[in-house]
Image 1 (cartoon, rainbow, N blue to C red):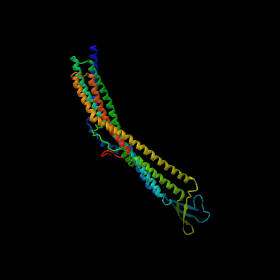
Image 2: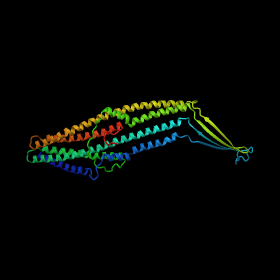
Image 3: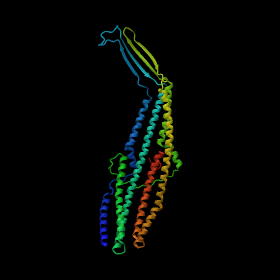
Image 4: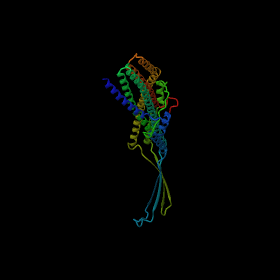
Amino acid sequence: MKNILTSLTLVILSVLITSGALSQEMEPASQEPPLTLQWVIDEALRSNPDIQADQNRWEAAQAAIPGARSLDDPMLNVHTWNVESPIQVKPDWNRSERRGVASQKVPFPGKLHLRGKIASENSEMVRKDWEEKIREILAQVKTAYYQLHFLYKSIEINRKNKELLEKFAKIAETRYKVGKGAQRDVLAAQVELFRIIKDLEVLEEERKSAETRINTLLNRDPEAPLGRPEDYTMHSLNINLRELDEMAIKNRPELQKFDFAIKKGRSTLDLTKKDYYFPDPEFMVTYMQTDNMADMWMSQVAFNVPWLWNKNRSRMKEAKESLQAAEADYSAVQNAVLFEVKDFWVKTINAQTTARIFSGSVVPLAEQSLKAALTEYETEKIDFLTLIDSERTLLTVELEYYRAMADFESNLAALERAVGVALTPGGP
């Protein structure tokens, strides 16, 4: 039986050595400079295609404003009458006429101003879409950055625990050889090592996926190298919920967009009323040349009759309904924004509290517990499984601490998007 256990031990050790070599090959290259959050943010603002697309839409909406304020194109009409042609060899009588007409339609006073105002308010709505997209992308970029930082820390912690377990395995093996330890202690250490090595392989794949996510947001090659995120000091959030609600109502681009939608709806309603009640004059000037007669000039004014058919009445009703819809949309978006603010505020505060508790008490206690367990194991006061439990506890609490840090920063980024402004010093 002892020979079988010894053979099993050799097999497991062989697997561990091979897997350990593989995990070392997968270790991120340290040639790249540290990856800073500011660089990632600047690159996203410069290169993200979604941000660029919304910026182009805003510039297009701006370009439409002068056109909305301009008059319609003037009309020129030139015609001749009773002139010789290849079809008609000789005119009916010896007199032909040439005529030129120039006309310009002029909207009733106030209509051009309203059209320009509508185009300007539409441009502001598009601009708010662009600002909202910036906030959305920044939140995604920060979340991806802090996730990548957490994965690097997880890999680092697991490697540190792997080295610690290798030390435990040597102690267990030495004690077994001298008859002071059990074979199961050696096997338990090796199994625990194998588990950590497999976890490292999974974490390496997740790290690559996180890097691909960042590269995609920055419009870079998905496989482009990224350095290791630099360590950071966790921010703090000291703003109450009421203050955040007020900030969101004042600054959230999505709310501002629907505020402009209401203004645009009112301007559109005013324009449809003017279109219904006030006709637009069209001024025409005619110049005529007639054989055997003096040249003549003629002027005239024409008016459309806007109230005769149902078209303008229908447009007025449509504008009223659109305005009411914009007002309802504003209320719905405001409710959704306030819910988002509270939801992310609660998550951020919880993550902040968790990180502080783990940093101030749980992690130091787990470290002390492992040191005490190692001393007691070496003096044969506890068994090996108790030592392994202490190691697992330290690994778990360290990972939970860095997970809480990443969750805090990610939820803080989402909270910044929800309120529409930066909540940290120097934040974009």
